[in-house]
Length: 209
Image (tube, rainbow, N blue to C red; front, side, top):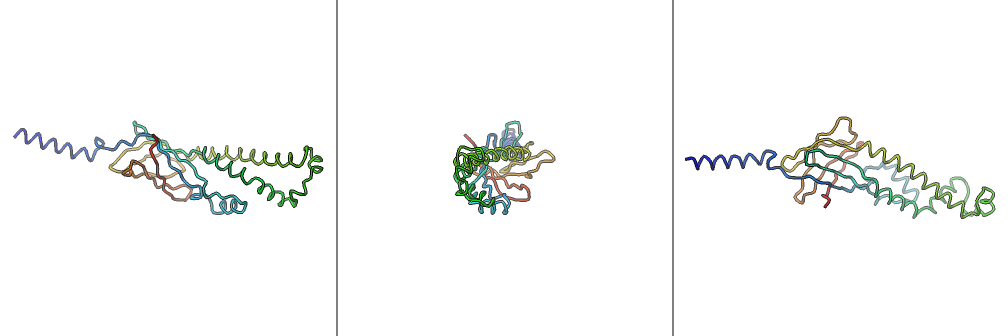
């Protein structure tokens, strides 16, 4: 009788563990997801870039999700890769961008002779064009600083718990990004449906080794 009772208690304990934290999945670690900027950029901004000859369809942003053992989490946007890729895109199309800027001013590259450049204090026309390129990239550095500040404001932190195949988040009040639950996939990745500035998309986070 005692053996049967012990077996029953062991069975009940095992079953109960399936519905409590004792048997929850361990999801601690640092995860990274990649999202195309076209998914949440304004259509007008995409069109403006297209009109300038800039194809932004492949530009993307890394998003990190850090889950700690003490059940805290941090959700951040990592702009490093985006800034590098966008700068390369600008540099590859710089001549076209300068031509468009000159056209808006009512002149063409041919109008900027060495004499005109020297009158403006430059050694020659090429030096003037090089300075224009440097000014464009300097403006982008200022934009990148602003972008980093905006992404910092969009950072989310709080606590989490695991329930079966879900990660449930409790975020701090006032966060700009809204989410409350993510799905744990069979391969260990985590899928999160996200709403940001009225746009909805899914992030697929991969655990970093």
